[in-house]
Length: 143
Image 1 (tube, rainbow, N blue to C red):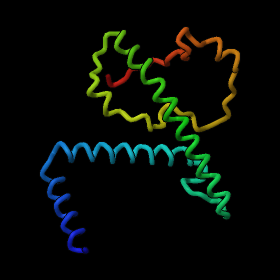
Image 2 (image 1 turned 90 degrees about the vertical axis):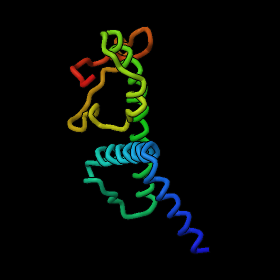
Image 3 (image 1 turned 120 degrees about the vertical axis):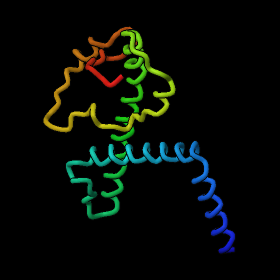
């Protein structure tokens, strides 16, 4: 049975190395995974990327909190990609759907990690447009 497993891995490696399209697909998936890990490291900066709780229950709680915050960042970023792309296209910028297929929402450039953040809830709600989104902060981009 061991020989069969080694043979399967050899066949897979040969297929992987001989098919550039498949290799690129796997690389993209690995890059997305790495960007998610980088986002989690950025979010866990206060403990220098380490789980410092001594007991399993506290460690599990910290891991769940990190997962919750990571998911919130990814959802927020994903939700605002649509209006951002629509705004850029309305301004005359050409953005191919093929390019958008390679963009990952797992990044931390849009997060303020430092200082206290005070939120005027009524003021924020008053800024919502008819679509229910906050106004975009427009700046020069690569597109």
